[in-house]
Amino acid sequence: MHAEKSVRSRGEEECRGRRRGPRVVIFDAPDNVRVAVVDLPEDAAVGDRICHDGRDWCITDSRTGTRVLIAEPEAN
Image (tube, rainbow, N blue to C red; front, top):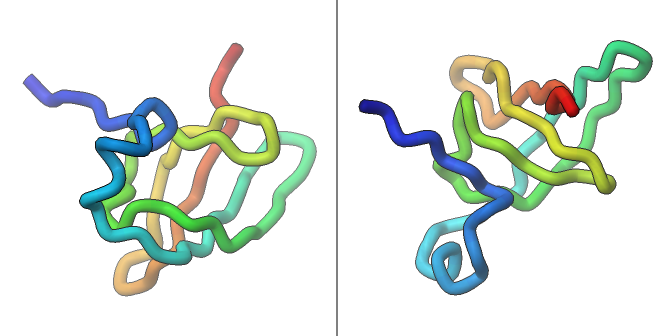
């Protein structure tokens, strides 16, 4: 069974040993698309959840060969 990772739910203690770095994230909301550079764990991948600008997002895609991630808003 695949365990879902959640970037947002990990505490500082758990993340402390993980390498982090800047990632370009395309925040693709139905009414607005924005691009931001966000400090995330280097292993952030499709299926992870992040919190950005007070909103919960799910990483839904990535661009092969780059550090670009695409995230869509979580359904409330």
